[in-house]
Image (cartoon, rainbow, N blue to C red):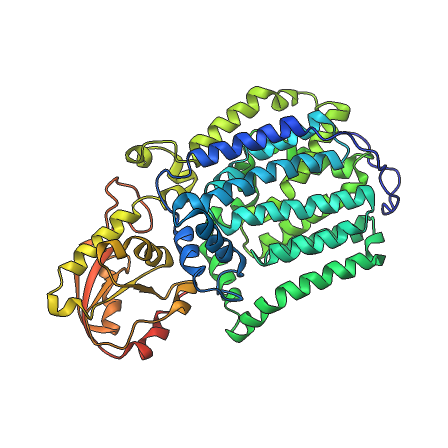
Length: 512
């Protein structure tokens, strides 16, 4: 790790040698297929994640934007259910395919940095056992597709540096347009890559007409969403503040340590080594912009209380940089064992045990998985949740039941009742949470209301702002002792509505 820095301090402008090693298609595709097969094999275990329930409904309310995301994921969710049926597996097939594709793109990134078979396999394997990638691949979420598209953007830039094929700049624009319609955060990755190239080169991209064409594609793709945001008061900015204030991943102190955990404790050293070598190796000097981009994004997201996985689009390229260096010059003394097959197998098994639904659901609460991957706990108990709400609804006197309204505290609960409620005889549920607030308010009736939440009975006093008679009638219990967001929430019967819903509904609007 003490190789001398490049003697030439100026920016890189000459094209990297266009010759490159052959692509190790067979082993890389086998790794991708193995990961995809594992994800598909467990796709129907436990149940929906709250985000999946939300996308399922949001896809039926297409819009140019939502307060918490751009429009693409709900549309893909709607297409998936239209093709494969309205099922959990239907949503998780695309997620598994996206993640398997990421393994291939990681291998291609190593190849375009000059890596041969070993470097490509090290990079693809690091991606395939990455805890964040595997966890994201199990659920249909914005993070799943964002990870793939961000990784593709970085690969295309790396490939452009090697070949200087201007068509790649247009491709970057097209993929960036898609990524920005999944998460607006993609703009920061693109900006960081541009800054990295301007700092260390190659800078020739600024003179290429295809750059302007790619930028035009991006503008055309994002303007409708930005217009939606502007017309609705820029709720995405409020959403960003809410996310920053939540303090996930131990906040700023945990920002860098959690990157190590999310990429695998043992395999994370490879991207750290790759980052170091982009600054120290003459052979990787053309890709020094990756180091600049990574460091710039670290500063930005530390300052704005971002999440550590916001940098995940760069991980494959940094793994590739480390793998290419090891293939060319050997691993640093004392680190060679970290490139061995047993290390990757151990990491893969550990990742599987900590991220995927491999345990009987009744055991889950007694495993470390919910503490490591809280999303797994959010996939348990939705049919039982709906049944408990239905029990409270059926307990109403018959003359009240026909005009009763169901109001729940978040989009996951509303989505669960949309999925399971019709079979239980429930009317539509409403929620003021995020995009669900825009899907419609309850009709202006003066009937009773079944309300789920606030979190405790003591907090129920807040409901008396809207109803004169508020009584707890039950409590959500997932039946397996698992501590998730719904566990222990009271179910209320509320009567004596103080105002029509047309006046009350703005009070229920909430971003989180």
